[in-house]
Each structure stands twice: as structure tokens, then as C-alpha cells.
Length: 257
Image 1 (cartoon, rainbow, N blue to C red):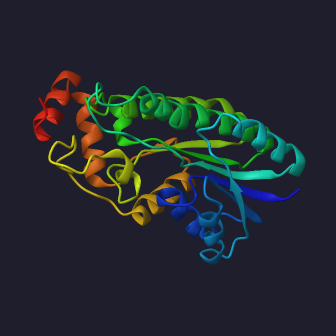
Image 2 (image 1 turned 120 degrees about the vertical axis):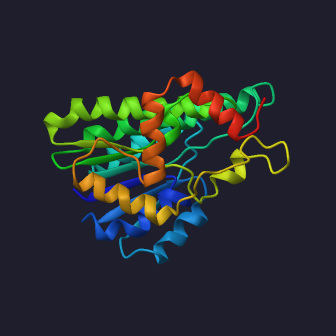
């Protein structure tokens, strides 16, 4: 039985950074790197001494469930770590976003994440770890980012509750809740013109910073982590302020009507 890690969204951004830093934090024989593009996954083999097995799957296509289920059943691995880093967002007015975009965010951010977690849990044992990528957006309702924020609220709630359930098996589940982070996420999320929803970023973190904080929080047994002082300050404020006021401040900050 081979000890492995499985990382989705591994070809870029936070997922890729987790692959690159895996060797310093987990002792596994292989990492299954999951994303749509096989060439990008194979490129990871030059970025880490941990053997990389490319698993080219489109997690927005429901057929991935059967394919991953078959692979797990065939290989019978001991999954020491699962990181669900696949996801996307689209920021715009509700009438400007297509039904495909709205449902696509729910499918990838919530449905695929839940499916991967359910598929992998039977192959986890005492000491297994799961990191689910949520967001600071999970803590508040955000006009013009409403579906994305709601999908991440699901991830946060799902992760923390699941952590309590599987603790008796010696498995830890942690939600990683990053603030604005320098990744290709924004190439898809934000319109590049003067009418863009997000006009002001309070801060912008590097993926290396986010992932380093995630590894440290995981080692301390946390069920969620919000990396960075400004991110923590925002989360603290939205917990005590009325959300109607939080939404008003957000819209004034971004000059939204």
C-alpha cells in the first residue's frame, strides 16, 4: 500500500505551491496531482523531489467521480493528505453573470470538493489530513460576489463540522481561508475595465505566505486558518459588525451602487 498525497488544482496558484512545499511537511511516496491539463502537471515533476503522478481530470465534469473512484479502488493507496485547491470565482452583477457561471462555481467549489473528500476518506487512516480551500469571503455576504462567497461559506462550514466527525478516526480537516492572493484566479474572476466590480484591494498576499501559514496551522491541529494580520482583522470585524453595515462598507469601498 503506497502512502500518497492528493492535491487538486495542482497546476497553478495555491495548489501548485502545496505540491512544491510538500516534501518539507509530509512524508509520502507519491503525490497525485489533479488538474485539467496534463502538460502542466508533468511540469511539476521538475519542481519537487516527491514523485508526481499526473491525474488529468476536469472536476467540473461529473464523470470525474467515477474515474477517481476507479483509480482509488485499483491502487488502494493510503492517502495521508488531501488538498482540495480547485475552484474559481466570477465577480459581477447578478444579471451579467450567466447561469453557467453561477452553477459552475457551485459545482466546482462545493460539489466537486465534497465528492473528492467523500471518495478519499475511506482510504485515510489515523494521521490523515485534509485541507479544504475556503476564503475570507466565507465569513460575510458580499454583493456582486454573492455566489462565490456563498460557495466558500459552504466549504468553511462543511470542513469544520467534518473535522469533528472524523476526529475519532485520527483524521484532521482544516479550512484554509486566504484573503486576496496573487494567483491566476483573477484572470477569470475580474473584468479588466473601468466597470470592474473590484477596484480596490486592501492587501494582496503571495501564495508562498498563504501556504506556509497553512502548513503551520495544520501542524497545530487547527480546524481553520486565516493567514495574515489584515485578513484576520477583517474577519474579526465582520463577526461583530451587522452584516448590513459590512455590505454597505464593501459597496462604498468598491464604488458600487
